[in-house]
Image (tube, rainbow, N blue to C red; front, side, top):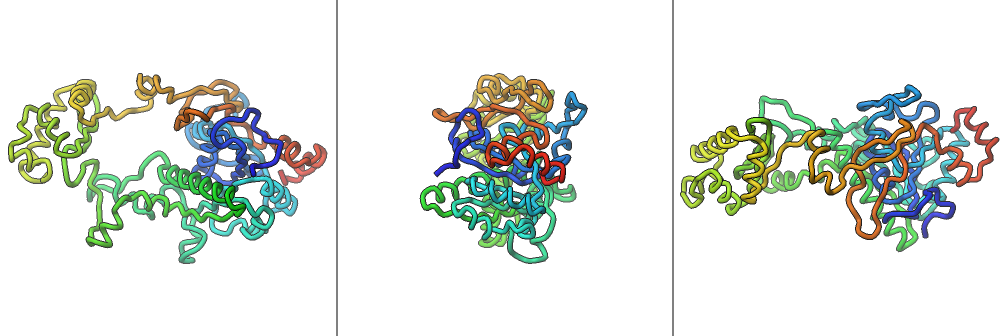
Length: 415
């Protein structure tokens, strides 16, 4: 069964219409997961601390609102379509209000150090007793259980990339330092794991009536996408190291500098490599160039790379991209924000969209709803809103708390 009426979303749409999600995480990973659900029609109630709300509201590339309050570009992008309330869980009244919300929710997503909510009387057993069907997704840096030296540690995108193994593979070889993937790649990977796992558990709850708890460690989400890195270690004793942009076992697969910018050229398999050879005027059946494809550090491999780089350096990015794509070789300009905004393919697919942002009091433009559904598309029906904007709607209309009580709770910092 879906959540009881009233549903706060004014017009039902998308694949997740009727699903109610409580979101109590901070910064990036969990709120982004909730935001993606909101784009697909879920009713998402995001709860911040009373007063100033989250610091992240104002942190990254801020835009000044008419009231003079800076609003982060990332907040505008990721906190649309949500209802925003404030609540202090540490107070007895705040705990009771939250439990009432949990009783009427399908999914609760949160991000904090392990067992943070236990100290407020909101441990998993208590929550599941209040709502046996609810799905709880705990997002933390190191997990809810494990080595006690790690479980209580603070974690951010940067630390998760390091501990999860991603940074060891990012960047050029020694002596260059490892590099991080941007922007907030570990957080966004974790957000995707948070959303798909929550929805998988939600489907199970709908079938069986049984809720459950998801323990999502940020470093494990990062670790999961390392492909065969750990199999190679356990079975071959191979410790992969940084190799830059270049593939270690075939070419071309690298970044190349043209007259006016950078491109990537990627050829997988002998057939595509042969097309590269034809573009360069080389015979792909010559044993010399056959060897050059696989043995990239051999004299033949080094010569091939030099020929290709010289060919690219003599041409503009547009020329290189056009010629290689006509030859059915993977090749792209390395795009910046301006180029993506002006690109005809981005425009023809409607990748960027406009919506009204209540904090800025104007229409903004950013990334639209992705992916595209044929029957139940997502939509942007609302932009970001100020701190506690929906307290009256959520606590009054949904929970039935009187206006006077709400004013009293606000005056005491409970909401």
